[in-house]
Amino acid sequence: QINHRVQKFAPDGKFLLAFGDRGEEEHRLGEFYSLSIDDVNNVWVADPRHHRIALFSSQGQFIRSIGKKGKNPEELFEPVSVCYLKNGGYLVGDRSEHVLKYFNSKDELVYILKKDQPSIDTLHFLTADPHYGIFTAELMKKRILRLNSKLEPVFAYHRPGNRAGEFGIIAGLSIYKDTLLVTDSGNHRVQAF
Image 1 (cartoon, rainbow, N blue to C red):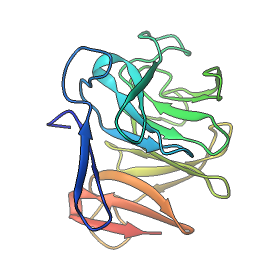
Image 2: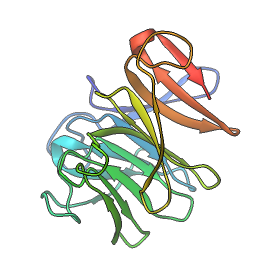
Image 3: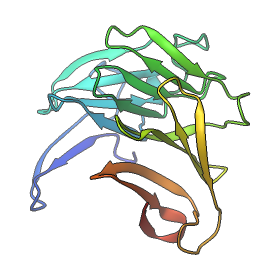
Image 4: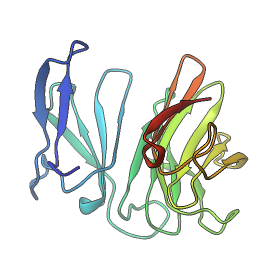
């Protein structure tokens, strides 16, 4: 985020390339908190400063911008998270009152989750699995929500604190081999559920 770029490394830690950099040109990024990788290894970056999702190839070539600035349901207002879905659709969390949006592969809005639904706040991190559903983190409330495919809350993991299973500041989510991994930067650890 500070360097306004995406960096790519090999599994052994060798630096491969960087792309994005700060700027106003279409191929540059303003700031970002989240990225996602699709089935062909394209990189989807949530760029709140430019009110868009920027799509890059795996080699860092700019492909296109997705979204238009605005606070209407189909528009984006400071998107802070993005998650590519196996069906070709994608999820976007932004700072408008329509806090989570589900778009299909044609960039058409399918479902929204508003802030007024069970006291939802800004959703900063997203991950999804076809078997387990959608998981998102509410940074300020220190909780993880599990959602169904219609963006309806199914369960909330809400345990602030510093013991095992409790959260300080949730800084990232990922699903790997049937395990939900949670980066808990407030407690300087990664937790597995």
